[in-house]
Image 1: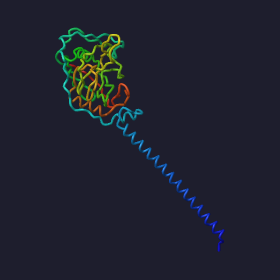
Image 2 (image 1 turned 45 degrees about the vertical axis):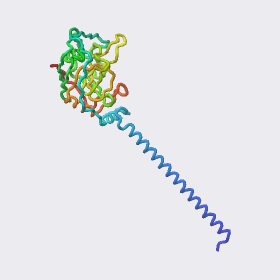
Image 3 (image 1 turned 120 degrees about the horizontal axis):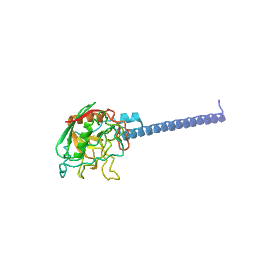
Length: 288
């Protein structure tokens, strides 16, 4: 039979074992809590990242991400807006100016158009045969006679034949930019001409407008050349881009398909957008 001393020793050892088990259980609970908390933080952070960036086509981290994110669903307005009208009609005819630019023509042998006695009434029909289908343009001389005159001249010289549309924007500014034989966004016809705009000018689906590099610091005039863009959706722009015609509804549907295919993000963050994932190549451009 154990003595009192032995019983006390046994009770003491039992208590020590109980305390040790309690400490071990407490440690395990703390470890589990830490792991659970860390997992929750990772999941929450991942969810925040997804919500912030998963549907943003303008924040790719690399070329692959740019291709996939820029192909996200694109919300495109369906209403085709009528072309604007000038608040005051231009004189007919008008004289234009096409001074030589500092850069040579992107296609050798390109000539500036005739500049005197240019009609500022009526329209001309142009047809772009492209790899995606046929784009039918209506060029409006009453809006921009010097621009229409230049476009027709370049088309007749075969300047646009074989060129690609190098940039598309699908968010904010929804447009497809074309007209540069180099495909870089910096090529032109070897001459420039002034803007044909007015302060109340706005932009809408179906419009053709000239791309430019702002106002020339020396001449204080516009820097239009050969590049133009097709507005297929939203375009909250200042009135700095000459509107010279429109694209037909069937052609707009073809451009919509290009927009839905996304872009590579190569022009982000400025001026925005990128090269279309679905190539648009002009085979021929003819004017009736």
